[in-house]
Length: 149
Image (cartoon, rainbow, N blue to C red; front, top):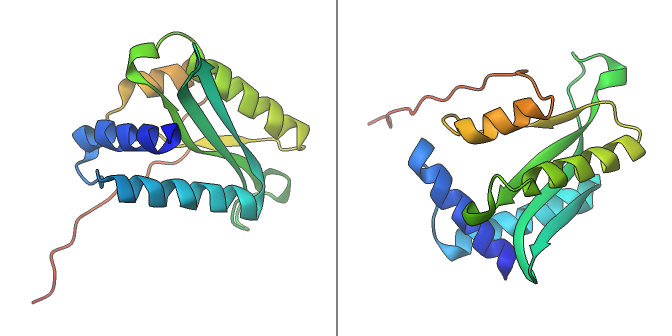
């Protein structure tokens, strides 16, 4: 299935940046199942990009709700749970088109905000999102802990 291959390709790409990705097919299949379950549970949409008859990109848009410390009118959000474009076709506007479609879906659902995450070090994606009007919002940090002996 093309989506499993794309999730595997994304994991491989991100592995070079953050060194914690599972690269086997079973993990990609499990990730895809989890994405579909999230959409089914909370609403949202899945869109795929097709080029010359082949699936070359996808976006998973989940509807979510931020915690109570956020103003009530801004708590419902659309969250880009996964976005991918095959490497050979990046820079052709496919990701932009997928994001624009997701924004249209979110707006039609009455949502005021769309949120997405970028793996640290993915500078090309970060620049592309900024060109689309996205700005910094939260910085998440990680620390690996040593096991207690």
